[in-house]
Length: 150
Image (cartoon, rainbow, N blue to C red; front, side, top):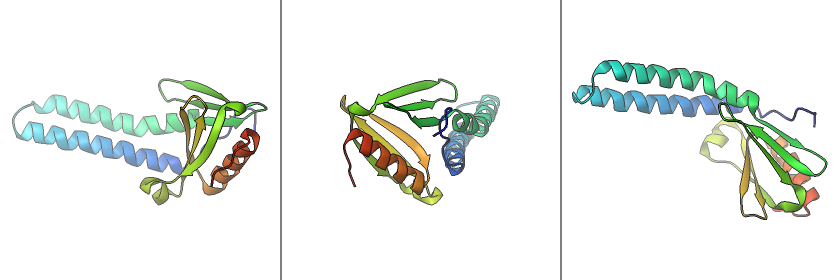
């Protein structure tokens, strides 16, 4: 693993754009209904839809560029956040178990989410991994943490 950390699979961008587009679509639908019912003037709805569309276009690439994971000597380092940046360090000796998940949208895009559970009862998620990445990281974490779940 390189010093800067590992990027997620690029297909996660398509998934995040789909989710953001669906959110912008909901804004358009609800705003359109509100305008049609005469509850709200059209100008604020158009402005809100414009902002939602810009956010849907810009935030997924920012989020992708900032998401990194890295297995270091004694811990797992996660760095993420498009607007609010978060860095998480999980010591290997605090890892309870590791699992790989695939929801419906993950399966459509051929991706996995790795979930790392800690002794504190918290879970850290690494989204947007291809199957080989997810399996390799899961196996390595399970090995260094002394646990393995199938």
